[in-house]
Amino acid sequence: MNEQLFIRIIFFGITALLPFYLYRAVRGPNVFDRLIGLNAISTKAILMLVLIGASMNQLDMLLDISLGYGLLNLVGGLAVSKYLEKKEVPL
Image 1 (cartoon, rainbow, N blue to C red):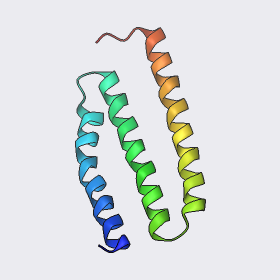
Image 2: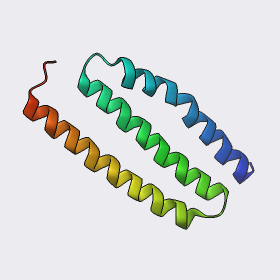
Image 3: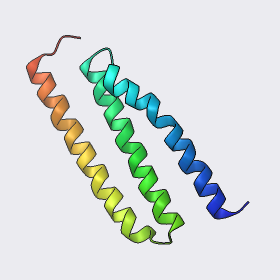
Image 4: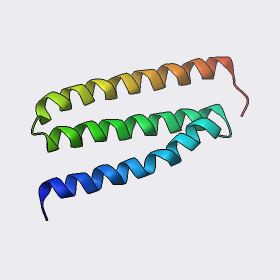
């Protein structure tokens, strides 16, 4: 199997999962489910950046960008969950 074809199949597979996570982020039963949906979308975006970098033979540049994006995702998720913990949001 061609490497480019394999990368495209994985890319479109990840893209097919995004509407399910978007539904979870928009219509989640509570705030924490919405946060999990947003973190899952961000994780898929990081994977897509790595796949795009691998397909364009520029993995080193896009890997650095995806690592930065992952760190922002981690810090943002922790900040929002800490805020919601102090606010005592009802489930």
